[in-house]
Amino acid sequence: MKKYKKVSVNTAGEGDDVKSWKPMPLFFSILLFVGLVFVIYFWMKPTTPAVEAFSKDEAIKTVQNLYGGKILNIEDTDKKYSVQTEQDKGTYEVTIDKQTGNIEKLQLIAAKKDAGTPSQAETTPLPESEIRSIVQGQTAGMIESVQLNNDQTNELVYQVEVIDNNQKQVFLVNAINGEILTKKEQTEEKNNNQSKTTQISQTDAERIAKNYLNGNIDNVELESDSTGIYYIVEIETANDEAEIQIDAISGKILSVTWDDEDE
Image 1 (cartoon, rainbow, N blue to C red):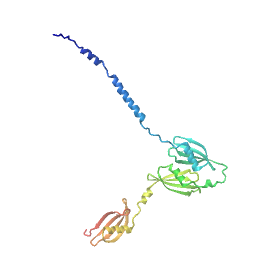
Image 2 (cartoon, rainbow, N blue to C red):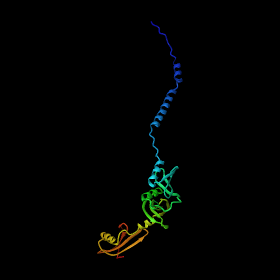
Image 3 (cartoon, rainbow, N blue to C red):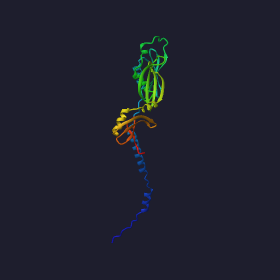
Image 4 (tube, rainbow, N blue to C red):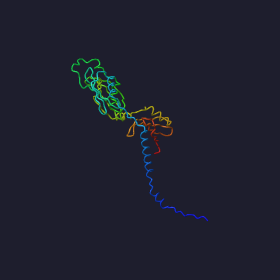
């Protein structure tokens, strides 16, 4: 009979080895992977190109195309360019918005002493399109009209009317050099009152009343109160008489009142 040798297994030692193992390499691997993902994301993320402002060269080209003359200097600020140009009458300063390229102001800063008799160019008004550009640089409203007039000193000026948020703005602009002389703001109360004027005639009111009620017109009166302006049409039928109130603006029938003779 064979004899077997009993061999003992040290399980306690194996347990100690397992407990002593720490998952640090796995933690650092995960951390490295997350960091790599962030790097790849920001590296491949498309960037939004910045909006380029109106350049100096574009500002100079705009002034030369509009006014000609010799460019003396250009100053670059945060929001504007100030371009000085020499003309027959003297030195002008043109202010240009850097973001839009709109001309905000044209001003004579140094007149020539020996200018003598004004030339034809000095007495010829700027074109309306240029005046519109100057005024549009000063307001966000919509230009309604542009008129060339003579002011009290017999100087040529453009009167530019602008509507902005139910307000009327009136600009007076020097027609020769484009300088904005005055700016006035007016509320649109006048226009609101005009909207209350009669839009339909008395004949229209009679026709509306007869279409609603068959009869003979006795009387028509135009009246108004705090609610608006309206016609009162008295119409007589075969059996009764009624008053029809008709909105004088829209022609809508507002009310019908019957004349009860029994009362």
